Image 1 (cartoon, rainbow, N blue to C red):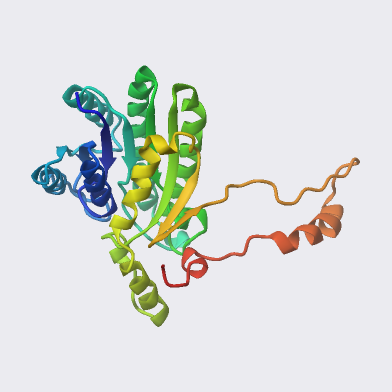
Image 2 (image 1 turned 45 degrees about the vertical axis):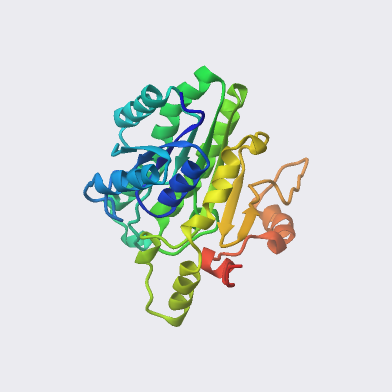
Length: 300
């Protein structure tokens, strides 16, 4: 029986591949999951998952490849079952898989909305739900899910991606609450790193070129240490949290909580809201800004 076993989705390339390789070096047995689809979710290719798994094995680690479609309920359950059959247990899930279909909101086709939500949000749920049965039975486990500042803060032309990624934050928090009694923790990371998905960003203006240059300076390898830490015994008391990794910066993000409260014993009207509540909250309103505007400085 292997000591620690992890499923990493989207592990054939990019951030997922870096995480899978790093965990394998730390002694984890890794199920390298990747459908092998293109950046927009089209097609399937077993090559990336098998290549990444072979790379781990060549380095002396333990890995098997999985081409399961994470948005398929039965396929994810079969993948988890195979992991337990192969290694005797499952200790962690890292949800990295994703696609992009960017479009201005008022021009976004229904198919692009459905495809992105299906891979990111349903896929994250399906894999996590399948693993939950194993975690409950063994009274332990850990999840790390990739979210994005596109959802936490906002981005142009990414309504589907932003909604899915913020949905993952809510899902992670719910998993942390529901599974705490089984010694299972769940956290989310918004990674900044150059990958093939980020490689679709436009470079038409000086601002866009500067943004891409900043992204290229941040590598998938910089994400892996935080994942390893969150899956380790050293983070046994950390759950339900949201982190950002940006180059050599690691951030703990705030989560929605009341920042201004007013009450009227006789209730509110439109007029009293306009005259009393609105002036009191205006200085605390969150600006309408995008992730690139908030993180406009060079990474450390």
